[in-house]
Image 1 (spheres, rainbow, N blue to C red):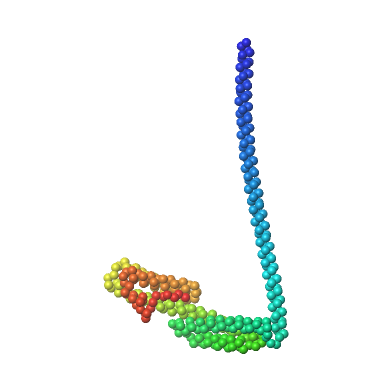
Image 2 (image 1 turned 180 degrees about the vertical axis):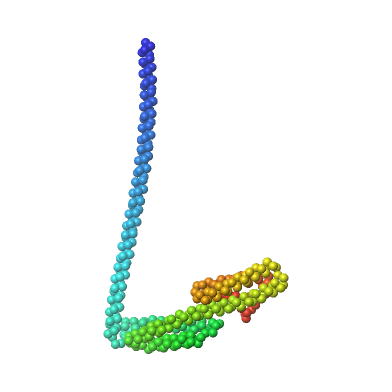
Length: 307
């Protein structure tokens, strides 16, 4: 009887252990399934994103190809129009060359060419006239041969302008056009050289003006020191004036170099330093000491124009 009871208890213990193991196996199997499902979902989402990206790339490429095709079509149309225009122009030129008189479209084309050539000569005359004015307004003495070169060029250009107006045939106009080109080639280098001269002369004039202002400021500083001005204020004014001295030297060096950009920048800095020195006088309550600079019309004024 005891043996049967022992066997029964052993069987019951075995069945209980088997049930627990089976339950754990089922739980582990369920976890693996859920993990596999999540991985599968992740893979599917990744595939969907890749599919959408591929779709966008494909659409972008299609749009790019479409845009390229449209651009090519526009270029082809432009080339076609240009060919047609050139062909029509060539036909018109040949027809006009065969005519002894300028009539119809040929007359209109002839008139437009004359107008264009006249405007070209007018611009040349304006350029030489402006250059002559700048040279004559400079403070320095201008060599007479420089002005004579400009006068000769202006006389020649005015004569060519009269010839353009008087031209009646293509041959007349062609001859004038050749003269205009030759005139520009002849005076171009001289024009550029005179431009540089005028530029330097204007810069030199501004420098001289700044030096006159500097002299007035130095005299004013001496009067300020004599009147027992505040030491720190006098020191600030003196430092501002010393900066001007240094910059005047820089401007002279820039003029020797002949670089327009350097000259312009150095003059602008000199102008700023002059304004700062005047400001220092006013802040020290000594504005009356430089009244000749800030108020008088006959004395030098701060440099306002930088070329």
